[in-house]
Length: 482
Image (cartoon, rainbow, N blue to C red):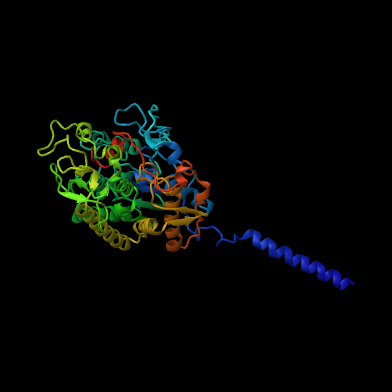
């Protein structure tokens, strides 16, 4: 009888130990940790994608979900001591539009349409401006690879031709540090740096329909600048972990894949869209019914003009302050359906322009891979991820994400920058590379816990928005196309 009691007690103890062990080890993977490494300071270098820019504006409620801020939180869970990840916050509803009074942020204005664009609310204002050191998030909306080492005054960059006041918001003309992103980054002596620059070196060309600028940054120039950027960063921070991300193909984002299907569906049987190819300002030299193997891509900036298809008029020329119509243009003809009143070059990425953008992305990414290897930096293949997202979708935390506009859940209302949940998806791509490259076990972001886009738009099928004219001025400012 005593032996039975002892056996029962021993069994109970064994069960307790077993269950206690299960409670201490998460069933989904290894215990969170940094493999003995110290991460006391993390700095993010980049552009609007890094800054937490979303839906055509920079505003605090979206910046809270910038992918670097999410990474910082997960590093803390793994034992890092980065503390509060400081960002150049802008109070909601965010940065002003070109007029300087109302917020530029896109919101859902009406379910009918749906109408998406600025609500007309007064703009917010900068907060956290008294931080007596550089920000941890050095994502400068509009930055190109040249800007990493450039020390031109941020006040000058706010003037034409850059006309970008956001350099001053992020870098704050600190006399002791200079104006370069590089100098402010290394002043913080980070243990970890994420670096995602180069997108704008091709995106400006693509979003302007190949008009302004009329070519991406040349590969030799990009090679020299990127090599210098990462080499200088590594020399200044010989012991830091550096993670770089490559450049996604512009053709993978909804900015280029939303309006084309809408226009194709609205074309009468046997009728083609008449459009201007690269460099054309007059009579159409391109036609499409969108059934060819590589049809032109209609940019989201064409949303205000899509409802005018087939109607006489020259609204696009008036909106863009043309002093006179270009030779050969006759706006009494049906817009977009007649060669003398064609869909403008600035609103389309034709096959040649697509090939140019694609070749630049491929060349830039080869440079990034080589420079990263030379400087012992890990690489996040964002290009491969976005291409797969477009082709197959992506599952995370029980959710399904696609590259569709709004309904896909990944991108915000501007069709370029990630949504809150999309930022979590991007953060997890960085974290996965850190874990595999450095032997860390940083837990992934629970994407399902982040705010989703407006329901039911985020749950529906294809969304073809009505966006008011002039709503894209801030995006054009970022890419130097206005």
